[in-house]
Length: 162
Image (cartoon, rainbow, N blue to C red):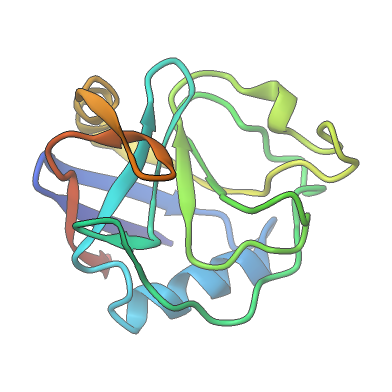
């Protein structure tokens, strides 16, 4: 199954792996189908690491989320370049709406990771890698408690299943 994230930098097409990460893909699609991601920003951009989005609107206004999803990081998928994984707090089972795209091989995030769990990969970028590369190169600043925030908003304008 594929989805397209239409951003103000271009389109990113993701192939989701519902076979290896069924609960995570179902969770991601529930947010997508509810329109949650439309109008959100990539709020954390660290070149040489990843770009993260899905939880904030412009102005770093956090969006409400549903209950967290069980961590499915033990699924054999790796945090390789252009893979898509769920963001979470130090609690392994805290992922909700936020996700990130790895922009290099981040094997230290793979199961079991540094905390016995790792970060659940649930898909990969299959088209629009150039867009991911454009986003990872944007200028960032610190905004309040948040570091690595793009100076100019990188907006997910709309999301759709294709």
